[in-house]
Length: 207
Figure 1 (tube, rainbow, N blue to C red):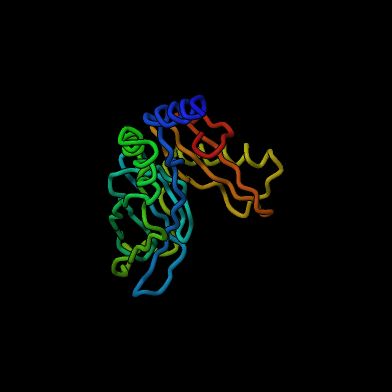
Figure 2: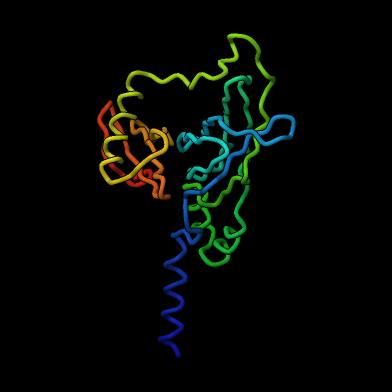
């Protein structure tokens, strides 16, 4: 009995400096609306202190959790820029961390962002409709020359895996100097490419 108690005590003490709230990443979905009606065909940028991510709306993206607010900017041809701020909330599991892992364990989760969640889906109300040449109606979002080269490389890399795509890979996120592109196959498969300074390779999502 004494041996069993010692083992249990060591396990609890050992967990005091570790996190038990698993996962620093979170999947969030983004929707756009105009006068409360769903709208498709736009692109959104999500930013917090952990990084920035891109998603075509309606759609989903894997982002890093954080205590800081999430800034969301959405663009759609024919509409003014739409912006929203999403507040992070404490995940219910963090209270279990305090009970089992102690204050130190909860501190670990707070530091790495694992203790927080963003409400999902994120709904962004589009701004006013634009009229005339400024609306950009029917024109795709502007791309830099480097982005065009990276998209071309990502298309070759992903296409070489036997992936037939209905559209070119799209920019799905960025971490420091690495830019991520996602290619969606007609059969449902999804592949990723990461590019740095114009040079690309195949990668897992945000590897």
